[in-house]
Length: 196
Image (cartoon, rainbow, N blue to C red; front, side, top):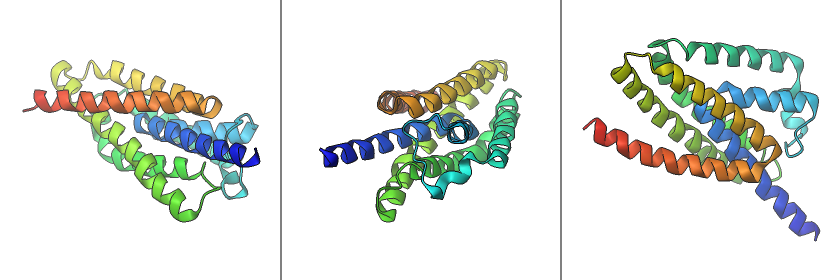
């Protein structure tokens, strides 16, 4: 029975990591801030609270991530600045996705943890971010930037929702992340047809 519980906890940590990584694909600092906030106040039932990652809950970390999140969200509401920001946000999303997933998988070996974190965490975040960036370019081109407000609002809301959902209901967050990944693949194909 203990083995089953440990296995389930391991699966939940992977689901939690993928959910957070998907959230990082929408906004880099939103899921990082949510994890920091949850760690600081101790309300994440499924969060890995190992000493290695305890610094995430420190007050200075919480304040720094909160400021970074505020600046990121604000910048995405400025037309053309948002497109510029996407050029650096794609690799940052990959780093954040990798980091967030690895932080939840401490019971695994380092090789497995970082391998899966890079492939599933970083890959998920970068895939979502790159597709959204292409969608923002299309929005800028067709609406002269006026439609980007809707795109930015949707991204921020999705990142927040998915980040919170990952912490409290990782299985549902994982299912939602899979749904988003499927939708992103379909959307990417549509964008390729548009820009041909």
